Image (cartoon, rainbow, N blue to C red; front, side):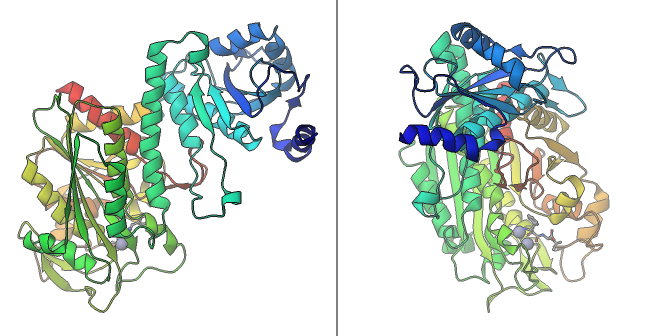
Length: 526
Ligand code: BES
Ligand code: ZN
Ligand code: ZN
């Protein structure tokens, strides 16, 4: 009886499902709360039949062509990235979400700068998985749609929720995903590829989780603890937690200057991942901005949307998310991560506009705007990163509102000193769909930060509103001597509204997957 009420409830309360077909719903061989996501391609010509993916075809045959029969009825207006749900058409499943993966054979799209086939799969699988969750399925088998890695990414990324602080009854139910190929051919390469996608999505989801966390639940000290917990007993990972006295002994005055307005102690986190079969001749250094809350300090920010600044440790979150995936993927690489962690607060000891500090590399900085704090903590962290003689230094920082004005959430802005390394990063972004876009490191901008009244450099460009992301990058460049440096301004991709269909609204954890891909590609390029 309860089950039959549920069915009626579904019919009445879930009109979003557009078409719900029910057939002998209580047949004994179907498992309650278990669904399958199956792919279909757009028809070759207008009003033509949709093309079934391999797994869909398999189930269509098994269901005596019920799927293709019903599809003719429900597929009207089914667009790329959309789905339709059928009930009780396939033995072993209560429901099936037929999701549209666009044109068959879609591949690299030059104008878009990404692999369209993979991106279509992420979006379509996400739509199927989310729809099945919304009707109460707790187990979902997913058609790999010819690219199990992309399918897993779309599935796992779409399930992310940050609801641990809500009442248990209001939290979303967990959904267990599996790769359908297990049930059909047990192809080990598809299984491996599914696992890769899952691990990459998990790294990004952890970054999203950390970014969503309120700043009172994720202070610098608590960030350190979260990282220690996550990597406990991981044999290739070593964590060094540096406290304030160490930061002082390293003469990181620019970093300390930002932290001094807060009563939360700063930390400098150094994480090393080294695989025993490491193929790299010298390590990669990744640096992440870890401002656990940015009020702006004395140059205080307006109140509207200030809560978003809990994610001003997005660079740090993507850095540890990357390390998580690199470790679980067991990549034969060597990576050092450097993360300066602090709050930017307007406390009694806070830095004030016009103050001058000396950075670790000996350069003096005039702090004309305390809200341009990210570049201050990164100046010292980048300089410290050079001590491990890395082959490349890559930093990620939610650095400027200006990059959001320039690129929005379309791509992270990248400032690179080596075109060869940039090319690898760009390719990595094309593969993951989480794209990057190159920005200029002209002397034009350097002049605007080095023309300074009291010190060697000023922390804001003298034409402060123009080219804000470019002057921030030019500022950072003053603290890097390594010939292979890339700075990613990720403020524009920090959060998602509805632009990326397989990410819910909220903090995005971008570009974690691209950096994992980049590190792997770099190790193969050597
Ligand atoms: N954390 C902010 C940048 C930011 C803005 C990140 C919006 C995510 C979303 C950064 O510390 C900052 O405040 N930058 C200033 C620099 C300015 C004072 C030169 C900015 O962008 O307004
Ligand atoms: Zn700021
Ligand atoms: Zn900031």
